[in-house]
Structures are given as C-alpha cells and as structure tokens.
Image 1 (tube, rainbow, N blue to C red):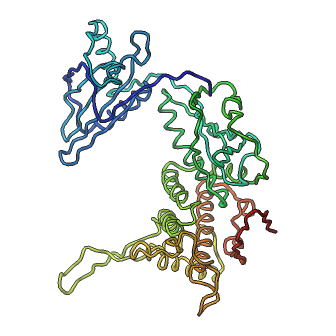
Image 2: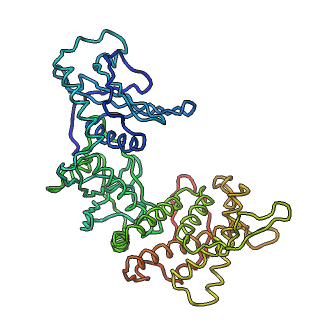
Length: 488
C-alpha cells in the first residue's frame, strides 16, 4: 500500500566500517566447505527478512570472498538505532569463525567517534540473536508454518496490448490489473499480483520473481507484436510501496495507482492476448519438471531476442537461433567413427552426424507438422541463410547485417540499388521477420504438445500462411513542423 509518511533515513557504507565494538565467534563445529554455499544462501534469506544488507568482496588473487551482513536493531527509541554486522571469509577451507560487530546509527553517519559502553544485558541479547541467526542458516527450521502472500509487480505493456479490465487467472493465483498510462514516462503500466506460499516474505518474493519473468516472456510469446517488461516506477519521495502483502482480502486500486500519477488509457486493446496467455500459462504449468526447466531457459532466451530497439536485430538473430538450438539438443548427434590425422594419428574429435543447423531444421519441421515438401525446402533454405549469413557472420566475423552501425539513419532497406531492385539489408530483415515468426510457432507448438493441450492455430496466430507472409509496403515520411500529419 502506498501511504504518506515522514521517512527516516538508513545509511549503509559498503566500502568502510564505522567505529564499532567487535568480537569473534569461534565455531564449535566448523562449517564444511561442501555446504558453505547452502549456509550462506540461507543466511542471506534471514538477513533479507530482517530488512538488512548484504555485501560481497571477492578477491580473485587471494581466492577468498569476504561476505558482510548487516541489520538494524531498535535502541533508545529509534528502530534503526543499532547496527549489527557479521563478516565471514570464504576460502577453499571450512568456516571456523565469524567476526561480529555492533555500532550505532550516529557513528555510521559521523564515521568517527567513541563507541558507547553497551550494557552487558544488551550484548548478551545481541550475542543470542547472532547465534540463533547462524543456527537457523545452518539448520533451517523445518516446522515453520507456510503463509500465502501476494507479491506486487509493475509491468510495462506494449501499445494496444494492455488490459482493459482486471483479469484473474486461478492457476497459481495470477491477477493482471487494469492498465493505466503514466504520462510523465510515456508508459502503459499494469500491476501483476502473484500468489506465493512460503515461510518468509523474502522466499515468497523470490519464487514470485521467477514467475513474473516467465509470465512476461509468455505474454511476449503470445503477442509477438510487442515486449512486456518490468516498469521502472518513480514514486513520490513521501510514499512507500508495499509490494509483499498477505493473500487474504482484496487489493484496492487506490493502493496501486495513485490518481495523480496514473491516467486512464483511451486506445483500443487486443483482447485475444489474454486468451493466448491463458493457454500458454496452462501449458507451461502442465509440463513435467524436466521439460519445464528446459523450456524456462528457452522462453527467456526467446524473450531476450524480442527487442524494442531497432539497433539490436543482429543480436535478436543470435538469441533466436540459440532458443531453437536449445530446443533441438536431442536431435543433434555425433558420428561414432574415429578420425585419423596423417601427422597426429587418431583424434578424439567427433564430427557431426546431425549438425546443429540440421537438428534445428528437423525440429521445426517435426514440431510444426510440416508435410509439404516445398515448404520443407523453404524452411531448410531459410534456416541455412539465417545461420550462415547472419548468425555466423556476426559471431565469427563481427558482421552486422541490419545496418545497426548507422543508428537508423541509413537509406530505407527497400531502396533500389545500382544492380538490384532493393538493398541487401531488406533480404536480411525479411529473413529475420519470417525466422522470428517460425521460432514463435515452433515454441508454441512444442509447449502445447509436451503439455498435451490442443491448439487453435488461428487463435494463436501461428498458421503457415501467417508464418511466411512478408510486408509489401515500406515507407518513410518526414514530419513537417507546425503541421498535423495523418496516415491512412
């Protein structure tokens, strides 16, 4: 919830420690190196629950990483009056000791001064708090009750792909709230609330953060026309955002969208995006765990390929080929024969029986159910061109095929040249458009088949005719000053 507040300040100094009282805890049983990662991950969750801070100082030369943890404690009526800290040095050995310190808010700000004589009772309580924290990190209590939380995210939606009304999706408790326009940032913003069960807020938020990334990627896959992404909001200084809430009760719009910041959207929106997303979200959650792990990596790779920047086309090609290659791993194979060099003798290297390019072609054809021979040949030629003329040209020879270096100021790609009816960039752009659509179709078809869910290809906009259609019109209009320009 957003609420007016006179906000106190909390200061952290990552690069220096203030005057402090410090001591060392010698561990009765050293923490074995094999479980140090788990221990520190659990400790991080505990510190986040205390709304503290975590700093890591890796030193590659000495092969050590100093991990520093700090949190606040109420003292003399100030909830940030005391700062408790721990430093743990991670090396190749087990952890045998923990350095602990305590200081005050005033000393943190002043960076100098005398450390107060803390009472023995306070020091005993701090020692007890640190000990419990270390024990919980080493042996997390299994009996802690789980609570259901609602985690709030703000996402930016593409034009005409917003949410006209609130949309509740029961599966995993996802709610899309009505989209509003933030005129200051020229953003269309929607709130997404995700339910998550966990013993702590920080664990619930981590689980929901994983979900929101997949949700934005699936929304992008569903739409094709635009990219959904996290909205970076600039709240007024005197407001606090409560982004982790209990699951009970309704969320009021006024607590999410301050009236002075958000305005109603007046443009028409495509209602089919919600239907498509529901199908993809159900399919994703119906996957077996191994398939879900694989597809999560692939869909996030596809998501990175969808760029709103006109100068990232070549990188989009690389990401799209990587997504299809990841989907085609099982289709690749090596020859079992032995290669012999006339100078070096027998080689360990195995050549491809089915190459990466051929595996991708086979995956597209089989997944999409392509039966017409001419269409198969068309797909094969397309994939080979994209791999060799765009992906490999960039990866191996740093060739940018989409005139990115001209920053959008190059002639129109459809402009005739001295020896052709269009420039070479147009062919690369047309190939990228078709290849992107084909990648989208392959991912959607693969997901639905693995989840055993039937698809309406018209509804999902993945018909063959749609895949291979190309835009026939290219235009460039110079906008005159002090004049309204209309198109159409």
